[in-house]
Length: 591
Image (cartoon, rainbow, N blue to C red; front, side, top):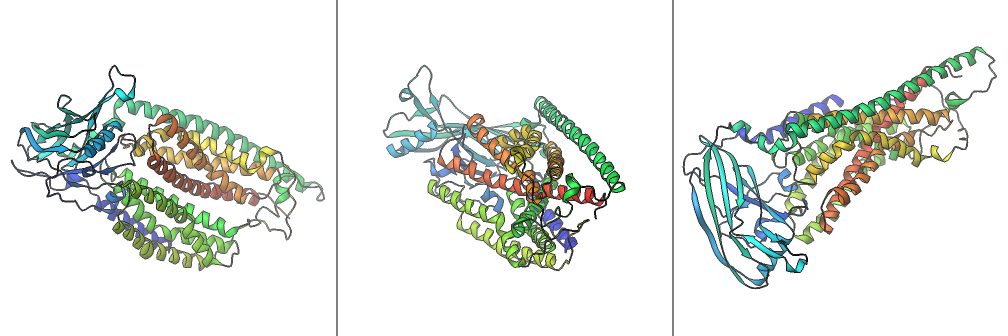
C-alpha cells in the first residue's frame, strides 16, 4: 500500500509540473504586425489583495467582441478572470495616441470611478503571459487638510513600453500620463476620450530570463544579504538554545539511568520515584483515542503535502506568475495524499485497540476538510455578495466536489482498509498495569496551557522573521522566490518542535504525570496558535488591509492554515515524544 501510494503521488508531481511548464518553453515567436495576446485580468483596492473584481466591472471601453480566456483550476482559485483587452498591441508596431473610445460617463459611472480612485484601485493585465500593472487614477491632496476638498482624477492615457529580442517579447510596462486626466470630483456627466501609446525597443535580454525581473525584488543582493543574515541569526540562536537544552536533558537522563541502576542493585523494596515510578501507566492509551488517531492521520497527510510542495518549489514549478500553479498543486496533492491520512489514522486506531474503525475513518476525512469546507462556504458567500472574482464559479465548485468524491474519498477508504488489515500491534517496552496511578498535584505552570505557551514560543521564534516575507507575498504584492531559505527554516522548525516537545514530555514524566499523549500533541501544535497571533499583529501593525471582505478572507483562511500547522506540528511533536518515551523505558529494567 505504502509503496504504490508513493508511486501515485510521484506521478502526480510530474503531472502538476507538466501542466505548468514554464511559459518560456511554449512558442512565443512573432513576426512584424502579428497580433500578440493582451488580456485584462482584474481591478481592486491595492491594499486588499483578496478583494478583486473583473476589469470590465468598471465602465472602461468595450469593443463588443470581448472573449473570455479559458482558465485552469488553479487560475480560477487564484481569482483570475481574463478577458480580451480593448488595446491592440501588434508586434513591433508603434502607435502614438491611438484613441480606444470616446464616451460620456453618466453620474453613476463617475461615482463608480471616483470610489475606485479613492480606494487606490489598480488594474492587472497580461501581455504574452507577462504581467502589467497600473493605477486607474490619482487623488490630489496637495495643500488640502480636509478630505472633502480632495480632487479625484481618472487617467485617460496609457503608454505601453515593450522590449523585444528578435522575434520575442521580453518585457512590458505601463505608464499612466499624469497630464492626461479627467476630473471626477463632482457628480455630473463627463465626456472622456481614452487613448494609448505603444513604444517598442530592442533589448539583448534572452527570452529564458524574461521572468527574472519579477523575482529581483526578493533576491536583490542588499535584500538577500539582510534576509540570509536574519535567518542565520535566528537559526544560530535557536540551535544554541536547543543545544543547551539537549545537553541538560542528556546529562539528567544519564544521572537517572545511573540512579535507577544503583537502585536495582540496592534493596528491592526501595520505593521508586520519578519517571520510572509510572512505568506501568506511561503506555496507557489516551482518552478520545478516535479523535487522537484522526488528528495524527490528518497531521501526517499535511506533513506529506508540505514536503511535496517544497519538492515542486525547489525544482522551479512555482516561478513568478505561473498563474495558479500553487493552487493546482495543493488541490491535486492533497487529494492524492488522503490515502496516507486514512492508513495512518486507522492503523494507529487499531493499535490503540479501537473497535469502530469506520467512524474513525469518517472523522479523519472531516477533521481538516470539515472546517475548511465551512470556512470556504462562508467566504465564498461573502465574495458573491461583493461580486468579487474570489467567488468561485459553479463549474469550479463542481470540479472540486468531483475531485473530493472520485479521488480523495476512495483513496481515504483504501488507506483505511489497508491500515485496518496491517495487524500491527502497539510496541510498548513495558507492561501497563490494570488500574492507573493517581497523578500528584502539580504547580500551575505544569498545566496544559502554560506548557503549550512554552512549547510554541521557541519554534515560533525560529520562523518569526521568515513569516513577514511570506505574509508580504501572500497578502501583498511582493513575490516570494527564495524557497531554499524557506525549506531550511522549515527543517529547523521541525527540529525545534520535536526537541522542545520531547523536553517538556520528559519534565512531565519526571513529575509523575503519565498523561503525556495529548499533551505532546498539543505542545507540538501550539506553534500554529502563535502564528495566528502573529496574524493579528500583521493585520493591524504591518498592513493597510481594510473592509469586511478582506478582513474575513485574511482571518478566515489564516485560521485554516494555522489549524493545518497545528495538526502537522502536533503529529511531529507526538511522534518525537513517542520515540523518546520508548527509548528511555527500553533502557531501564522495570519489573
